[in-house]
Image (tube, rainbow, N blue to C red):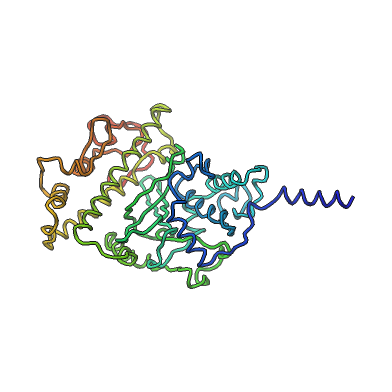
Length: 420
């Protein structure tokens, strides 16, 4: 009888086991290891979309991917993991989602349990929760791989756009390598996006900006009581309230850079960043067109509009254009424009100056191939934006999305970009 009772107790314990045991504790040593892991090849765009990945099947948008990276590292290194679930708790009664969860006991395979955890996090919390509950603002000179940059943009009709970037690494000159997901990526079950030179352009405010994950034991603890070495600081908000966008992010780059580029290198970096931003729009638009081809051209509801429209991305692209133009103006006024190579000087003059080039060197340097047999230059795209011809609406045709002449959709505009 005693043996039977003992077996019953053992089987009950096994049936309600933690997802994983936390045999280690978060400290600065583990934060450094997390930073090194994020910057390593272990974190890559296909880690959720490849069938060879142990985490295949986690379909994650931007905030979900940020949570997932933290959860996976915690799982692989026997560290505690916990996030607040203030909104999702209304449905699941789980105030915390943690490694001690017993929700997934029926799944036998451990990796599949983790995938279920990641998807459950995605169903329960989002970017608002990530910014308000599970991260804290950091000292700008302490920014490192594994930290996050989160932004929020208010739109017309009361709608907002939020996004989370994972800082994968910091480049020599202080720009960021970023890896992140989107709602469209989650819907299409596609690889995450990796950007080698990402320049942020949304000033921090409120709970948005450069942030770092809380240690589980610090949930509910006042920021003022955090260990000093963890890097808590509100300095970015005070600075952002006094600085223009370009000025603020230049200040950040100067704090975290490893060295200086010469003038030619600096201009080339900015040119390449603008080119990368413009070319990346091709996939975003193509995703919307593919969705329409698959499901028909009926008007998209708010969820699909939010996933496949490009108001925030187009605003971001225009911000990069504007930042580069401000830099160009400063080069002209200082006389430094004449110090550039003729090739780079001609590129800038063609994009921003009152100069029309008869050759196709700018087009060859950064072709935007948005349709078979059709490509445009950075100058042409900017002219189309400034002429109000480029559409962010996912129900518009490919041609209209890129500023070609054509009739626009009559479908509802759920929210609009800043430039319209």
